Length: 584
Image 1: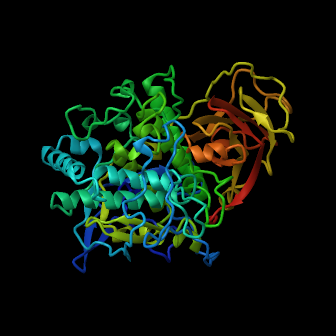
Image 2: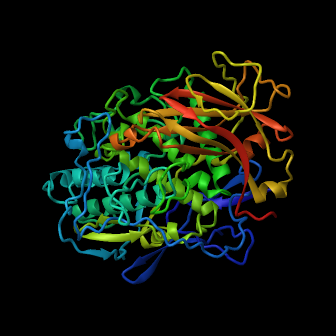
Image 3: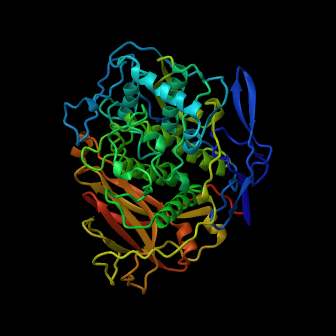
C-alpha cells in the first residue's frame, strides 16, 4: 500500500482534508488559507504528489488517525511572569561564561516596569512564503532586502526591544532559565526538552520575521529556511559565510564551512566517513524520527511539562535532538562555544533563524502527515502562554493553541525535496567499539557510569506483534534517570540488535542506530543542581525492529555509546505506549 500527499505539506498553513474520510488525505485541490484584510486568500498547492511506501513510513503516515477524544484538563499550563509587576529576572548564568559577562544579561527591557500586555492581534496580510536557502541565494533583490532588514535591526537603539541583540535576549531568557514562572518566582522557565520547544520557536520566528518586514516596509518579507534535511542543503549556507555581509558571524567553526557535510551525530570531532555515507546516515535518522514520531507525538515533540512540575525526567523529541547537534556543529568547537554553540547566545547568529525555520517546516510536515490533528489533546499544552514583542515593540500575549492554526500567522513554505520521505536504502551498521563484550546481562539495580560503551539485555513486552498491534501501540525504549554530573555538554548514542544467543551479543556489530541524547552546556544554576537533576530519553524502535528483521526476538541488546560528557544512567527498559492511530 502506498500513501500520497503533497510536497508542500510542509506548509505552515493547514491542508484541507475530509474529516469524514478515514484516510483524510489532501487532494490536488487543497488550498492554503490566510486572512487578508478580512477576506480569505487562497494559494494553491501546485507541486506533484510524492509517493511514500507504507512500510517505509510505518504505521501509516497521512491520515490513519481516529476520532479525537475529550481534552485533558489539568488547569496547570505554563504562564510567563507578569511584566506589569515586580519580579526577579535572573542572570542566565552559563557555566562557560564568567558571571560578569554581558552575554548573560538577557532580561527583557520591560523588567520592573509597568508594561501593558495585550492579547496578540493576528495579522491580516498577504501570505509570506519562506523559501529554501538555495532559492534566495540567487535572488539579488531578496538578498538586498534581507541584508537591509538585518542592518536596520542591528542599528536600532539598544533600548528598542526590536533591536537585534534585544531579540536574541528573548531566546536567552526563555531557553536559559532567566524568567521565573508566574506561579512560582523561584522556579524558572525553559522551553527546551519538552512539548513547548516547537510552538515557542514558531512564535519567536513569527515576531522576528514581522519586525524585519516592518523595518523595510514589506509585510510579505519572509525568512529563508536552511533545508538541512536535503542533501543539497547539508552544508552551511553560503549566504552566511561572507565576512562582509551583515548576516555573518565570526563565532562559528569555520572548519565546517562548505563543502563540509553537516553531521546529525556530531560529537565535537569530525568522523572518518565519506560524504555519501554521512548523507545516507542523516536521511535515515530523519526518516526514523518521523516514522516513530507520527503515531507517538511525545517522541517527536517532547514530553509534557506543566507549570508546577519540575522539568526532570522529561524526554526531548528526536527533532530537538537533531537540532541540538546542528547547533553544536555550527558553533565554536571550544569553550565557551559562543553563539550557535550555546543557547545563551545562539540567536546572535543569523543562521539560527534559518535553522529554526527549517525545524518549523519539518514540524509543519509532521502536522500535515497527521492531518493537522492536535499532537496533544491537553489544555495544559494548548493554553501554555508566552509574551513577545510585536513589530511595533508592544508586549503581546500568545498561547500554543493559536500557533496550531497557522493560517493565523499568514506564512507558508515553498517546496523543497525531502528525500528522507522515500525509501531510504538500509544497510547493517557495522560499528566496532573498544572492549565490546560477548556476554551481555540485564541492566540490574545499580546506576551505571557511561565512561565506556555498555551493552544491556532488555526484555521486550511482546515479540512478533501483528500489524494491528503495532498500529495501536508503539514499542518505546526508555533510558531513565540520566544524570550529567557536571551540568556541561553531553552526548551518547543508542543502538539496538537481536542477541547472537540468549545472553550473548555480537563482538563486532552493535546493531542499528536508534537515536541520541544530546545536551548543550547548561546554566550555572542547573549545573549546581545537576547531581539531583535526572533526565529521560525515549526512543521509538518499532520501525527498526521491523526494517531489520528482529521482531521475533524475545530480548534485544541495547548498546549505549558515550561520545562526550560525564554521564550516568539509572535504568533501561521497553514499554508499549498507546498510539492515536487506528488499524486499517
